Length: 290
Image (tube, rainbow, N blue to C red):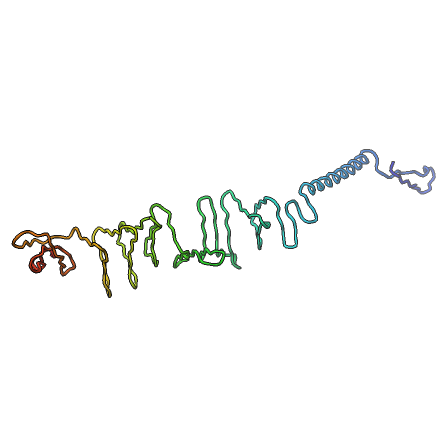
């Protein structure tokens, strides 16, 4: 029973009045039972909350050094095992454990952005399921020693390797010009320079050398094959030089027909064969030059 307080209320003394009355002060009946119930419910909630807190600490593996696979070290945060980030991650440096690889996995793509002070994208790398895209002012590939292997920008593409190999069956297509000191095929493979719809021009400030050491050399075109030397000469050095499809002149000398011809040159540079005689017969067959 809760302590009860009693006090006596004295009325004014009057004739015929009753004696002093006693009034009880306290909580009785259903109010008392409700108070006990709420106190008991509060204690139960406190115990449940404490138990849930201890369970969360145990499941999440909270320790003095960190939480779960996350450890707080002097150099920063250390994650052990697989980690998943649902929001953007901002970090100064991300590196793997010594001797282990660093993997980035995504169901769609992985994007790496380099921003300036105004949060404007300067360089961007996007690796997706269909392509790898890089956006920037310049792209470079170097060796461990710092030697440039490949670079590309708005003006030019530079290949710094000692040898450029093209493994495709159709070769390489250059829509415009190409500048190189040497074009060479692999050993025992043929080299073909071809322009199916346009002309093929080879120019050099000091000269162009075409050499086939172990095979034949063939140059074909549809309309005109032009060899031009402005300050020097054109030299054809071979044991045999054949021009099988030169036109023939119509002159026939008197006497037996012979199989000796001379090569004649027209004013426009055209060559033709004329049957040899006692003297030159090129003057007689000038109609071939028309």
